[in-house]
Length: 166
Image (cartoon, rainbow, N blue to C red; front, side, top):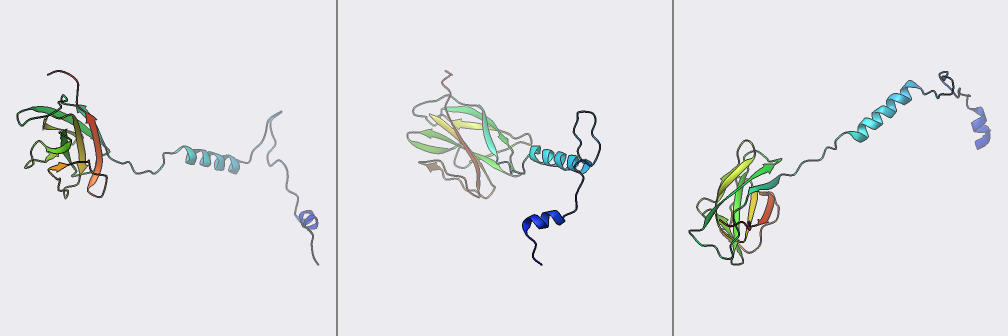
């Protein structure tokens, strides 16, 4: 025997429209439905499981100069946000159209403190940059453009030099 859709619906058992009596003028809900609704609410409001990418903030910027020289030094400081263990900072100063590793080619790495803070001397330039890098990164002494993120370069930030007078 073939059942039509209307006959199939007619053959289903009747369920009560209210599982629990409601208060006067109120609505009633099944406790399981309430728990499920609360679960969905919490799930929707919980923080996502995104991975946080490291970031670089500058806290002290040297003054800007058009052309820096070997004797012109300033302090540059900052902090790493959401850093990774054993990462280091490489600082660059821009002068005469190129980025130069700081403070010296032979001392290109700046350690990151346990609080995420970092700082070093830099030769003066028009702009400054900081790269958060892995221990295996080998920074070039001079680049025309700052590098992009990759497996060894975890974060890149740059900023114009300060306009404050010395």
